[in-house]
View (cartoon, rainbow, N blue to C red):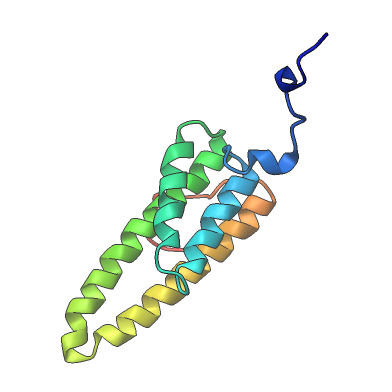
Length: 126
């Protein structure tokens, strides 16, 4: 007689959303975008990107590098904008940073959907 508890459950496609690849990259970008409404989600996206970067294929690694750099550069811009908000210029910095993050996430989402690498993941530009 076989033990019913010893059977391995069937794998579903939704079980692999934490593994490196297209879906995982898209989740990282969406978590970054959700950060405008829920402040903690970009940190979760950053952790996921760091965990999967070394296990990913070449095209996916470029997305993880792009996402990680997007987080750290945006944090730098937010800190500079916070300091400059004393003289009201920082408000424009916050807006510019938000637009920059959204554009980088949209570009990343589009390229991830086509499984294309980011051309220059080390770039500060778009």
